[in-house]
Amino acid sequence: MHKILVSDPIAREGIEILRCHAEVVVDGKVTTDALLLAIPEYDALIVRSRTRVIAPIIEAGARLRVIGRAGVGLDNIDTDAAARRGIAVVNSPTSVMITVAEHTFGLMLALARRIPQADASLRGGAWEKSKFMGVELSGKTLGIVGLGRIGSMVSTRAVAFGMRVLAFDPYITRARAQEFGATLLDALDDLLAQSDFISVHTPLLPTTRGLIGAEEIAKVKPTTRLIFCARGGVVDERALLHALENGKIAGAALDVFENEPPGENPLLKHPNVVATPHLGAMTEEAQTRAAVDVAEQVVEILRKT
Image (cartoon, rainbow, N blue to C red; front, side, top):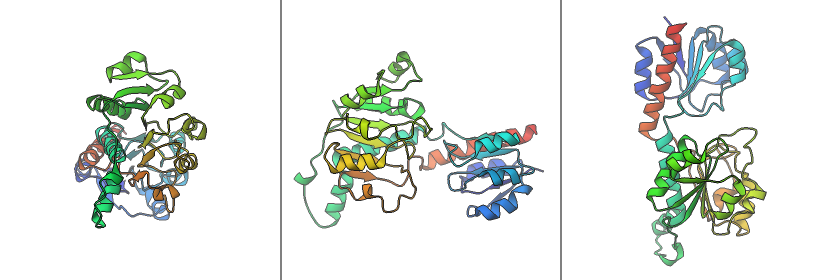
């Protein structure tokens, strides 16, 4: 019988699927050293974002046939090392689309209406209506950088809010962008210059690291607000802080950071920043979809080996 190790917490529904087909061990607190010792016994490893599946772990997995991540990216898995060993790597890229798109809008609204700051003020005993003057989304231009699975869902929701949507994505066609209510632009600079809100939805790759840096932020209007729910590192945090401190951008809403947890990141202390601790995928529905999706893929791969 196959053995599967689940080293990060995943939804019960996924565990139940696995247990119908294999012996399953769940250890959501296993350390790297302990994993190195344990992995030779297992045919499959399932993680979320806590466990770092580094090359030595993969090399130690004598029986390992598949690594599954119950989530979107594969940042925490050494896919090159897995490929060298012929180990399949699977994830669940569609499971969090709705959840991240909704969180993007939650942050956009919170930023536009200064909801967290107003909440904190009221809880502190103040009644400061004029201090928290906001702006509407309706009639504004939203620029979406990356019109993939999540970006496209943000676009359709923005249209429902009465927003004009621009998009920059070198991998899609104008016709495809129009399906989601967006106008595709050829140059990122044009999107930056025209947008009232900018939402970034690109993966972190060598080509996208620092994609939104000092030069790019310098092209936005001082009334522009940035929403970032993709992967830390795509936005240059130092450049963003400098722009906020100098009034070159009106505000930012951040769900991801280059270093997580971000520690004493000065962006967290800026009055025009709204921040959440990488909550984009954190809904019950998304976590259930992710667990079920990756469990079914892992079971199918093990069935074939």
